[in-house]
Length: 343
Ligand code: ADP
Ligand code: MG
Image (cartoon, rainbow, N blue to C red; front, side, top):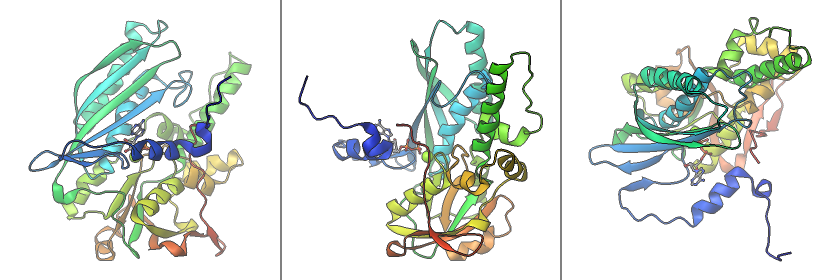
């Protein structure tokens, strides 16, 4: 037996691991403006910045093929990358697609994945320019790398928030996680009784949020139209609370949010109740919503306050005031982030 030190990844967590790896990385090119640590990397392309982001989806970890249609999977693999570009206030340009396929997959099955990829390319106006295909011995792997572009004076990092700026989130949160619960329940019932048809009709919104997430490019175009540049931004992939922590950490601040301001869809709320799970906990920790969380200057509030898809949930405060939440019964509690743990 070797005496070498062994640290479990779970001890430092996914983010701790990335931080540790990033510390030793050196950058050799002056045009690398931002490396590891934001939603996408940034490099100087002369009159504008280019963005690069990469995301991998693994069967059994990120999706279950017993309920994830292949077209939706293809769409989602692109959308989650576009979402990271949106989080930098950028627009997508190109993608490459890497596939790990077992012999379980037919040509027709791969065609279905690509149907979804092409649909996303059309929806988000992206060019599919390459990729790689290999065999996989442990399930389907689909990994997408996307490039994007943004004007130099419009780029938004996680780190730009200032004290007393307003914290906003788009759309609603928690529904994708609740949709996952519905799909898992139906799968278990189906395994118990294969003659049974899954009952998903009652849950179109939450199931759709899980199976076919959208990147909020609509909001990025609206920011441009309204002349708004958020001061900081991140997309909600791991869970709202965890993303708030990221904005706080990178901006050197604390934050205060209000539980009663969390945007929760009606169907999501009712379905959470059916599962006896707290909809607020789902909203804070559910993940995979692919909404945008961002801060704006107070003076920009007027322009966004009546926007149906943008919700003010709190404000940024000094770091020593912590990360707090005012609950529905007016208690101030410390905000907890459970997020998704991959390790
Ligand atoms: P997101 O949830 O927005 O996709 P992640 O938490 O996956 O962001 O990644 C955070 C940062 O760490 C990003 O800059 C990403 O490029 C970087 N990163 C993640 N995994 C690795 C890795 N294995 N090597 C280098 N950088 C990584
Ligand atoms: Mg992100």
